[in-house]
Amino acid sequence: MMRSDPMRHLSLREFDLPLLLVVLTITLLGITTIYSASRQSGLDAVKPYYLKQILWLMIAIVAMAALLLIDYHLFLAFSPVAYGGVVLLLIAVLLAGRTGRLGARRWIEIAGIGIQPSELAKIAVVLMMARYIDAVRARIRRFHFFILGLAIAGVVAVLIVVEPHLGNAAILAPLAIAMLYAGGCNRKHIVVMAIVGLALSPVLWHNLTGYQKGRLLVFLHPESDPLGKGYQVIQSEIAVGSGGIVGKGWCEGTQSGLSFLPEQHTDFIFSVFAEERGFLGVLVLLLLYGFFIIRGLRIAAESKDFCGALLCVGMVSLVGMQVIANIAMAIRLMPVTGLPLPFFSYGGSFLLTTMVAVGVLLNVRLRCRTF
Image 1 (spheres, rainbow, N blue to C red):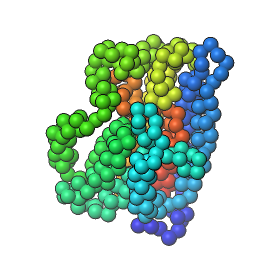
Image 2: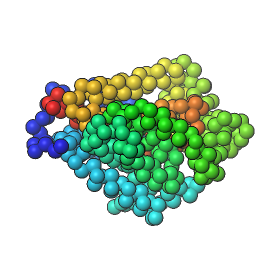
Image 3: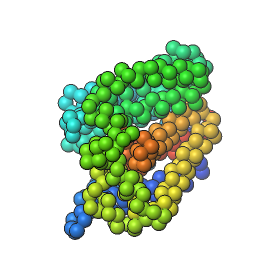
Image 4: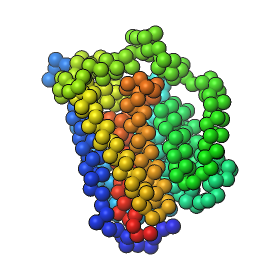
């Protein structure tokens, strides 16, 4: 339900400064690591990725601050428009998007700026699902209402798979399940859908591209193609392991400095950080992410507004699952999925999306005790 006065329920005493400071700390660590990862060994040149990331950070902070001034119920009221908009953008990407490596279409130019709609789609899915679950309430325990909730994420996931971007599509399934679970769905329905998913896995496998199949197969045996599909994983493991306890030092990593590590400023930036900062640095980074997740779930638990709590669960799940997926990928606990590390990896659309998630959390916190 919309509120007539978006500022009426604003309480600055409830502003979660520790959450914001932790996010900014992670982001600044990411920028320093992007700088290191973009250095060219033996040369004085540094690719300007870190400068672009700083620019995107300033844009993201402005966007996040603007979000705080608007009652989050207004976001929910316009969630169908946002959801419909990203669906149209995803279709536009398939029809006229920029073709990247391996024939994937993931980007579209708007006013001269490259936008990755699949990133924005994740926020739209969270908003739409929160509105839907809040509208049906207890009826979410019925199977067909549960399926309709899954369909909100499923439509977007199918469009993203076609791009193809299997990583972004795959993250939507656990995200939807987390929100449905928080909304009070019947747990048996989750089990049923998990069984159905396993049963349909041969069909999914048959429809994967050869490159995607290769990534999944090489996950089990990277040594079978050490200079091809297994190269990324092998070099990532070497980088993480060579960091030792205290690391080699900032800008002193050999795997990144000598360009052995591919995609080192995006997908495998965790490996760069682990090599330079070592086990102790990784431990600090994990504690920072852990604080963010716990703090976000605490905001959800303390919110007196059901849809506000759902929004928090969705945003925390969105960030937390990508943290787990990226780090697990870097240390070969999961196949390479192409998911970046939240607040840390290079990428304007991705940074903007994750900072919007933070803005929503802070927004709910500001108004969490007034309903």
